[in-house]
Amino acid sequence: MKDIKSLARKSLRYKRKDISVYIGQGRRPFKYVELLNISQNGMLIRGQINLNLNNCIMSKISFDKQHVFEQKSTVVSKIKIKSAALQPLKKAWFFFERDNSIYDYGLAFEGDLSAVQTFLLRSNIERRLEHHGR
Image (cartoon, rainbow, N blue to C red; front, side, top):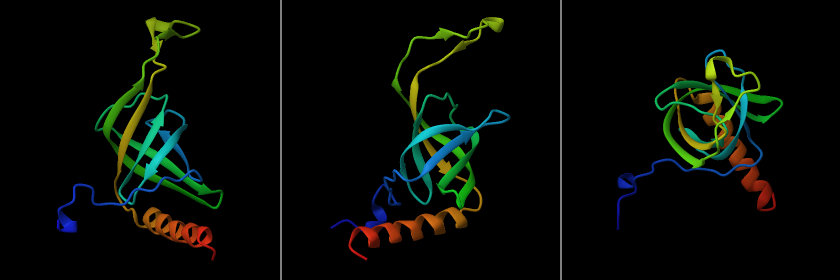
């Protein structure tokens, strides 16, 4: 039997439909992305947004209106899910084109995680207790 410490994935990931995630980078406004799963160390998101690997971004993780956390994250993986034809912007300034492809991104949380981790764990316990007839 394998020792639990030798398993490849060391954190439990949760699929949560009640959490909203918005991503912002630099001076760009925050943009909604779909949360595929979340753990205490990071999350997997999907969106029509083009991020570069190893870039630092800001994530707004919203459990509800009272519990919104801003969390620094690093893009650690990027997978193109759906390719879309490049479409020119309405005003083709300097020949910029918009990429309408859909990507999955793995984000690793950085910095002080205690508030996000604590609330994620507490809300998971509450949801599980409600689901099992609390």
